[in-house]
Amino acid sequence: MKIYVINGPNLNFLGIREQGVYGNDTYEDLCMYINKEAKKLNVEVELFQSNIEGEIINFIQDAYKNADGIVINPGAYTHYSIAIFDAIKSVNLPTIEVHLSNIYKREEFRHKSVTAPACIGQISGFGFLGYKLALEALLK
Image 1 (cartoon, rainbow, N blue to C red):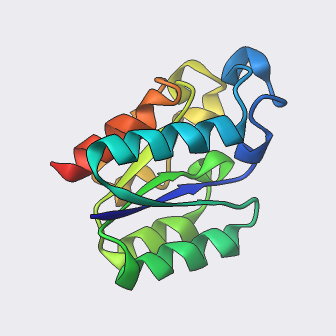
Image 2: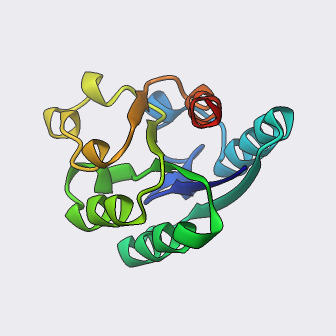
């Protein structure tokens, strides 16, 4: 099984950005964690991060013929990107939305996800563990 793991804007600034919310671990730490957990689950992952909406959409569309599922943390695009919603719907692959922080305990504007309805589920607030849980869910 091959899973695309997509991270949106500002995830590359983990360890720098809002450490009180996201902690001190870096994006490289997150990638190592995901790769380690995927190996344990015998799942192939392809990691991708972009701050650019169109690049994220292109990668989602690439999954159509090259992946069995998607784990996505759309970052701020969660709250307003109909284009990412449409891309997820168009590829018709099981997709799970992941957020490191609990978006429902943060600012009011973060409580609404326009991308989650295109997904089979959402995991929020468990830090890096959320990615492992998403991979496990896609296996089932």
